[in-house]
Length: 322
Image (cartoon, rainbow, N blue to C red):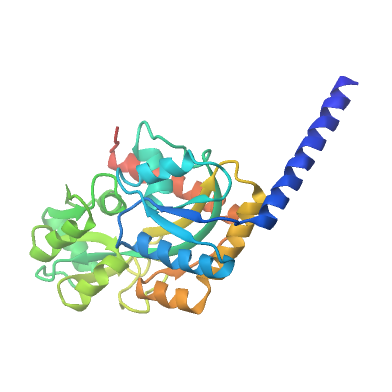
């Protein structure tokens, strides 16, 4: 009897909760939204955030403010959103670092990439390129491998545990190459080191490298994506004998855990519409970014797979951060 009462009460409670969530979604958004970008202004994540904010404003007639809360590999801004009210008015543009790498890299992370967030939509991806100093006698991936077996090649990154670092470590372990990691304070000084000859090569996002490639200051060797780029004609790693080697910078919207599903769904649908708008696609193309626009469940599965994949890379590199 008591058990039957509890079950009826629970059913009534969840029905009321669902109805309340649906009602909230009908009115959502009724005030300005804050889109937290956990990295500094000017980078690909910031530019993607601003493109999305503009389209959401157009759809809803409500202000969407991009708030750059950078620092500590995205941890500061990401933690802020994890601790925000779960009402859809504070959301996050997360990335490979915040929701793929950090969970395995940091011993004491201030947020849980899965438990503290509601996945909303994967919005864009940008592949990495292997680029070398143009003075190196390297024009193909075969040349690169041969040289890295004959001598030690230094490579730069945006810091220990960054995608740039882990990509180099994966190449080192998979092909048994002589590579030496040199961390820098950001990808810009790491690219400068490649161009000056201080380091030999780097794995870097296409967006960051393309202008230097066009100027002849870097030489692209291979792209870490499933297919070739339309703008820079180099083979994929699969084409040069390293199938499955893919390094992608990805960007996705997350809401705080407990945000009602009807609001999450409304956000997801609006983002799917936004990323497929012609002007947004043009802006993304200038960043060599591929628009996606996934469902919340698709993003949840993607994040789970990325956490597992990067955990293997962190373990192989034998690195950790406090």
